[in-house]
Length: 206
Length: 152
Image (cartoon, rainbow over all chains, first blue to last red; front, side, top):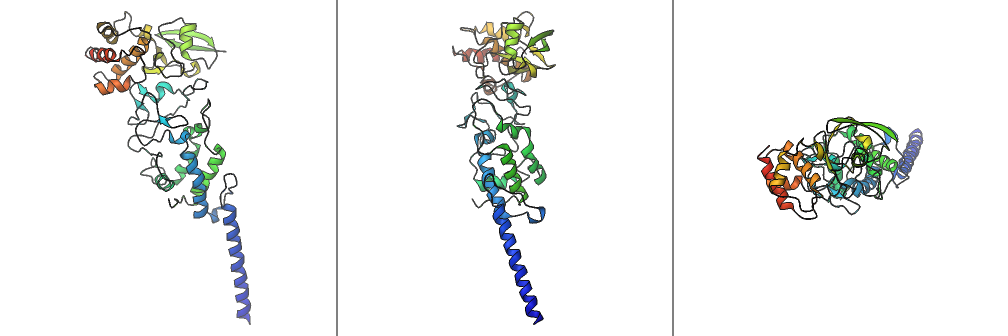
């Protein structure tokens, strides 16, 4: 009798737990604007992580991000990601070579105007010994690269998380002129970036 | 408008201009240093090249607010009597055709040779890629830089 009652209570508790977990998973499932951050205890949710990365990937592959993560040693340029005019080279530190450094044309702050070079104090490509290529990478390849300290600029997960606050990353949303912005706002990007990492930084299947 | 003190060719100047004014226009309009030319205004042609703390930069792309205490050298200040090795080689090879781009070409070439006194042909080509010459005197430009490198 008691055993049956305990069993009923146990089944009811299990069912409640399943309903709660299901509800949280549904809530966590990402839409561009609708992601709700989970409490610490509920993190490491692979579905939520992968859903968030879909939006992260859309931003990272946008010209404003990808143009400085080219597969070659010359940056890309413009909304059509063409090879940068004047063919400036990456150089060992990613800041160009000799008289063709990034800072030759990109000042700390640029001159206002439609086609003037955007400014930033730390304008650079990834260095030659760790090129951190985005161009041509699948979502899976890029996610795996981003979490690998040997390929992501020696960043642990905390440093990777904080990379969203980098001034050069932020400048992707403030390039000036008529340059197209990434598909999410900067605040939306931070949300999905943190959601991807905080839920376990899982890589999609492809 | 704002007041800025800038060092140009070893002399200190005070100018009252808008903070976004490209240094090119301060040099030309305020200081009347007309050797630095205006070409495209968007850092695509290299005609307006000057040195900022020794580095070649496009003066049309640098607002005066970003110059701060850095030292500017223009074509007028490259040498006192026009005898910088690049200037001498320019004459020797009779480089200019129309001559409009030559101040920028010389400023880029002299910055290259200051950093790398013996550049290879590839290094010269890469370093000079941002300086256009509509007369296409590139062959003479490259020869002059090779000649100047022997004098550095």
